[in-house]
Image (tube, rainbow, N blue to C red; front, side, top):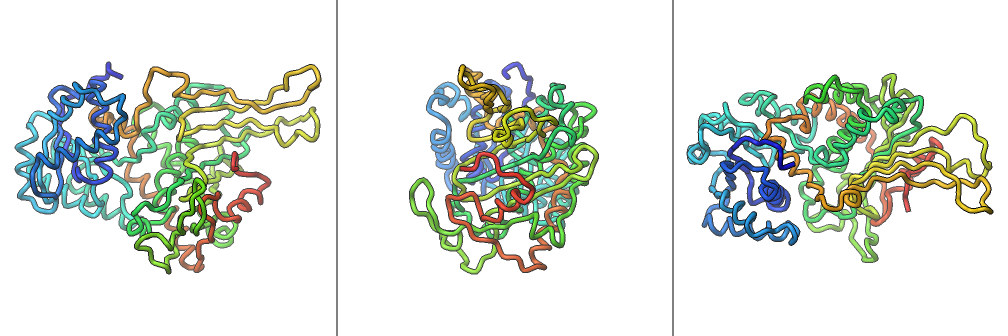
Length: 489
């Protein structure tokens, strides 16, 4: 990675004392500096509304760096170099006066990267004030998701940004797109004829995408209760993964070629309405249960909870894509809080061979599976059928992996955090890993019809005990089609 050329820039982080900045963004910037991927003349500006001593706020940032960066990665010379780049500026994001001081900190010959680690409601005001300060023409803006809570509100946010910035200088972050394994999806599919020639309804039976969180709300009840799991996870992360799996080959690796193909998938998603709301979608809400052997409260018993809330903490659904490649191939999406384990994985189930010649009782084992693990351990595993070893085994079959585990295969290489890759690509001016406005809108359109359907039907989320894989009806959702969720224990 050190051979990558990155131009000097001024990186201005709005919301620099927030949880995201302290836990993820500053550690990611430090790792880039440690790897010598920041230009020597790059400046880092920490912008926040908190007044007081700049030195105290910089000390807070350093404290969190030491907390969130592994001890083995905290190199004194790299840390000293990184902290020397960093400046703190008190800034009221809504008042234009303070932006002149920002302009003085950003050399005119350098691009300015404005990262909005703030509420989406202030994106438009920040953009307007950047423009008033004469900074907009050389600025790239990075927008954290979620952008809005439905199609209408997302359009308001995006339109407010678009008044001052063309799409070519807007970078919408979805951190899942920066993961090493997600990036490998492109190479796996389009650089290996073994897979691409089989990547369609002729060879694939169905696809699972699971993003399970072991934790509960973690003090975010006020935000989460307004969003729910569909808006928080399905609308962005899981639909983005679905698009990368399902898209047709792009004409090249340019940002718009890739994003054009992703949009085609979103446009082809069949709406789920009428009876489909009860047979193809399951909403859940966790109740008290156990996690790691310890009792944990239910969603309605969390701190500051509204005991009447009907917000979902779990969603499972069957999505169908109306095109030639995926006709008749269901995509099962599942995400929830208070699951038995933290797990993000994609499972591609290939169809059985057309003529079966082995023992009838083993037939349920047949079928290759490509397992793409995003967390906790990034890697790719292809499960294939082989013969059991031993003279007494006859032609008894077993399913075993052909496995690529990134951390085991490249033991000397540290796997970069997703934010490191994304921040580096912003500095390089590369939009491949970022989400275009029309992607956001088509994803919201599809999710909005589900939310409207639930509201009109008065559908309440089904309870599931914390520490389990969701409501029983989520199992019925897939078993109704003669299938089962892979690997549930």
